[in-house]
Length: 607
Image (cartoon, rainbow, N blue to C red; front, side):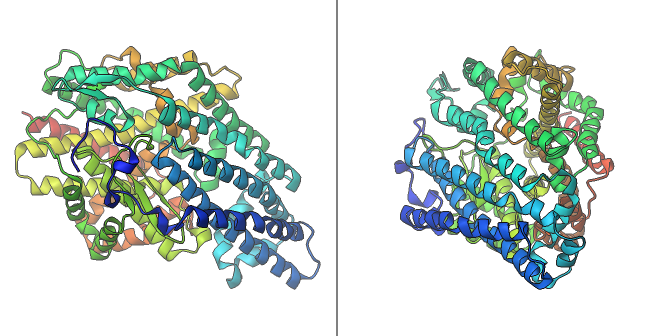
């Protein structure tokens, strides 16, 4: 598909490049029928939860009532997840579509209603006679729920009474509002300026085009794209600041009512992640900021700049190699890179391509960026905004990692154990990125290619480990500020963000004023304490990918066990299946030591 300067409407995109959401629901009418089915099931869900809350004295009847409640809850959640996924993905095709905006709003309301009905089940289970849950965990009939019951027991002290949990659940729709406001503002309402590209052609800045522009060889284009994007967000400074502050306060509300010492602790607890892992990541990254400065100083010299600015950090210093692959070419490049994972893996990847599990190109109103998502009882999907450059090829490999993680988990685990945690979610995607990079380095003898690819790998390190850890620091401090009673005004947030940029980049770069507003365009900040997992995931993936390349099939077999584990074990235990213990700070240090080595190699390559 040729590159366009005009943003195409969705109707102008050829069918072969669009995902086939009909695999979830053949028609909107089928979705509507399932919606009504889900709504009609709620009284039965409520009755089963009530039975557990007022349990029968007979142990046999009690066991049956508990199993029935868990089965109903699982079936309800599975259908609700499928309904919401379809609604949201349809909206993501074109955020201007009022029909699907309505679908999402209806689903958010239905999920809150279902959550309020189901909320008393957790405290009711915990109120059962001593030893009941432990006995169910050992019962084969409860095999699908044993890990969930273990987590429930661990969270006993943070579980409220049935009525209190119901009230908290009813607040869920309000807590989701800041994220929805941000999405509508950023993806549907904002209009970004038009700038001239390297050839003097007018190009409208979009989320999808921004990274193409910021990687331009022309510094003017980089600067104008950077300032144009962030200048637009700055115009909405007060609105976005208020939305983010509301989101943070919602996180704190949830932590306080569930008796956690902090919103950070509350966020990490469901995945059994100690706060020390979060803090240890920040500490480890701080120790390697001098190597980051060395990389940025080398990039400044290689680009021939007197001073390096934030918008110069993305462009690769090597001009002699480009990977301007069409999408069909990109698919084959990625499949070759993933060959070390074995034929069953690459066959499944090819199936996802051939059967239209991927939405390829940008269109007007489409959600920016890329993600993988799907329904348990169909298959995962990928939303992409492909352009003909290396970053899009790497993103394809990345999202296919997510897709295959879900594919293996859903094929192996029952629904209650299929939703693997965010702590491990970025591992599979990054393994694919690293394997792709190493394969391309191996196949390209051209020194320019080597310099480009090592530079891109280092940029992945910078963008994923250093940048996401900086984001994690921002989140940790904004929540701490609010917990101390300090106001989260736009000015305060921008000052905090600028200070972090000075800490990470100030030794080697000039910190532009426009960067102060960058925090306001980061959608992941509305998923509290999510971004640190990119950094821990990259660190784990660096170990796993290199192990696969060194050890071959034995490492692949371990990795497939990890991909198939889902939430059948805690996330740190799942990663141990692949050979790495992320509870140890040394695991992050190992990845950062590799970064230091790559920086030295990179400098030598340009000598």
